[in-house]
Image (cartoon, protein in one colour):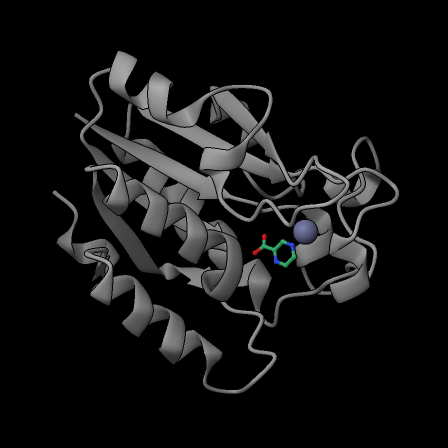
Amino acid sequence: MKALFIVDVQNDFLPGGALAVPRGDEVIAPINALMDRFEVIWASKDWHPRRTTHFDRWPVHCVRGTEGARFPQALNAARIQRVFLKGTSTDDDGYSAFEATNADLEHLLRHHGITDLYVTGLATDYCVRATARDAARLGFAAYVVKEAVRAVNLAPDDEQKAFHDMQQAGVRIISIHEIS
Ligand code: VGL
Ligand code: ZN
């Protein structure tokens, strides 16, 4: 049993947003297309308090309840059945969706008999990487769909490093065309 997982596709991570991921908007079309091929579609949101040590590292973004934390209009969010809120702590980055505090992602995946997690969204070098790595570590078959992710690339090779690091952790980096 497979599930589509959409990491942090939120206004603040799109061009013009508070922590814009270069070409972050380009993940939306492939994600919308992928939704037709999955029955289980879950997502995470970066959901920060106004003050957190996370903002010592990053510009203020995705403060819970703000416009920047919403899903973009163009994303077919009506298809998302569950949203996992993460980064909710005042003293921890909380990059992985497995660290969500409103619901237990690992438990719910097992409860629904999901063995294969297809990870998409933003950003490849932070929350996508952390989420996919945790999925693999916990024994799920973890896939990252390369057309449906984009990186922050604080250093220009961060995306490549993230792909390599995920592969080392047992995550499979695949193309949309390889999904059956
Ligand atoms: C993220 C940086 C800061 C992410 C979240 O969703 O990848 N990156 N907060
Ligand atoms: Zn954040």
